[in-house]
Structure formats: C-alpha cells, structure tokens
Length: 338
Image (cartoon, rainbow, N blue to C red; front, side, top):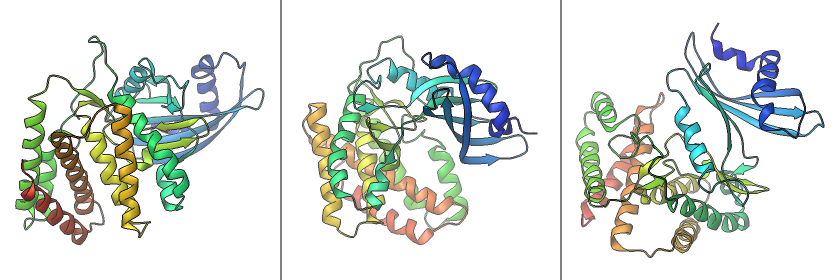
C-alpha cells in the first residue's frame, strides 16, 4: 500500500495529528475529531503528489484548518523552510499581511504541514465581478509583495536558488525546448528565439547588480487569499533570490490572462493592473524607471510563455491558442530596445 494513503485514513491521521500538531496549540488539551478533504490526489503504486486539508476540531469545538503538501520524489522541505524564513522576518501574522503558519516537516511522508489561510482567492472575486472588493484588495496585494521584496536577510540564511532564473525554473528551458521540438517542429525556432532573448535580458540585469531580492516566484490571483484577518499569499515552492520585477510582471500578466476570460471590459482589466502597480511603487517606495519597466515587460512575456508551454505540452493541447501568444510575445521582443 502506498504510505501516503495513511494520511487519508481518519483513525491514523487523528492519532498522528494529536501527536504532531497539538503541541503547536498549547491553549488546547485535545483534538476530538478531524475531517479530511483532498485537494490534490495524484497517487500511484509507490509515488504520489498530494495536498490534503484537515479540519481539526479541538475539545472546545473550535476548528483550525491544517494542510499537508507532500510529494514522493520532491521533498517539500524547501517550501517549509521558506515559510519559516518569512515567519522570522516580519510575516508573523500579527498584522493584515499573512502567510500560512508553518507547523512541521515530515520526512516520513516527504511533506510539510501548515495552518492555512481561510478565505477565498482573488480569482474568485474576478469571476464574481466583485469590483469593489478587487479595488480594496489589490492595494493590499501590492503591499504584501512590497513587504516581501524589502526584507533584508541575514547572511547566515540560505535560500535554494535553482528556480531563480528563467533558464532554470522547473522544468527548465532545456526540457521545454526539447518537448516543443519533438511535438511542434514548425514552432521551435520562434520559441527558441523568444527564450534566448528573455534569458539574455535577465542575465544582463542580474550580472550587473550585487543585490538580489526575495521573490515569491508564482504570483497570481489564485495564490492570493482574502481572509477575515487580512490578505495572505500561499504556495512558496518557488521562493528564491532574484529580481523583484519577476513577481510584478508575473502578477500583471496573470491578472490580464485570468481576468480576460471573465471580464469583457479590457479597460477595467488595465485599471486593475494599474491599481496594483501604482500601489506597489508606493509601498516599496520606489519610482518607475525605464529599466524597471523593461524588466516588468520581460517577466510578463515570460509568464505568457509559461502559459504557452501548458497549451502545447498538456494532455489535451491547444496549439492554436499557443501560436497566438507566441506571435504576440515575439512581436514585443522585436520592438524592445534591449
């Protein structure tokens, strides 16, 4: 039996969480019951990639939501460590800018347990056309990323950086180009041209600066949670040291891509992006420069190429959608001064 199935067994998990989780809540004396909800359940013979949610009830009937993210071949220590670093550098959940609370890492299951942020993600409110809430929360999202990017880490703190550049972000450009060449040889030249341009532009900047910034790495509306306690960000698997413009460009591109499927008013989508960007500059206490704008544009193009990879390489591909984006990004790069 695959060992991860134990974490779907209510009897086993109740005992396990009593032992592992209860010490983090000293105000409580017992866990009386749990409710299990799988969010990602990719389980094979011996391998797995899962995210399970546990509604944990204490003796006074108070509930807390605990998650586990586990992968048989990719230990989730990195994401756990990222949350611990943020927790010790200002994201202590005492104000309205939140992170999940890291609890413990399990070597047994190659996963980490954390207290989630209860609420709905920003994409939910895009789909609902809740413009009042969006205009309230986009500035707080900007404040969250500005706070992250302004953290000055102690030199003793180590951040793994294999995901910190366009060339190396999993699954890596080499892998992407190989797959595109195999399946879509007519388009490999354009895709390779685009990646060569983007990698060169990023390298030109990163080699000139001594400072690197903490970067979330996967900034998009579904990773931003609006809670009664404030606004939080989740999914820290790609936290790294790099160019802070990556988070800005990624978020702006994802807002446009996701919102365009639900909101017909392009002018309003541009307004949303403008609210986020203007507030980011305000909270980060920086001004827009030509260099910063070029880098934001770079990471917007890169985000769109990540979407291209999904369209081309998923089980049910959509090459016609990918080709439209490839042509658009190539046009941007040909017009770029860099």
